[in-house]
Length: 72
Image (cartoon, rainbow, N blue to C red; front, side, top):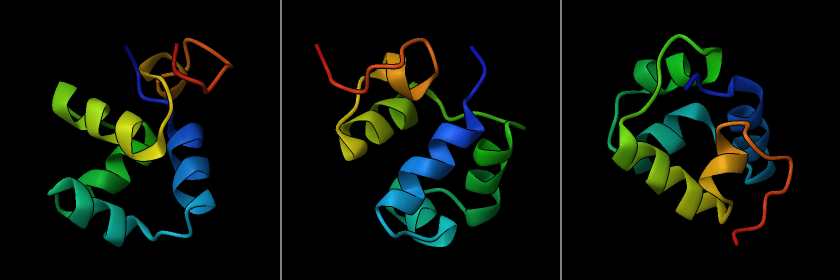
């Protein structure tokens, strides 16, 4: 499953956060988070779960398998 860089960036910007701030919340270095947004890497399962919970969206939405952000 490939990360959805645009979706990650849009969600982060909608919260008014910088990449550095979100990286700090996730416990990763900013460079690693930047890779997620560029599609050059992806978080481990715990990272995906953190992001889905943080943004209050489904994992399917976060990774581009659904256009519906609401959790079921």
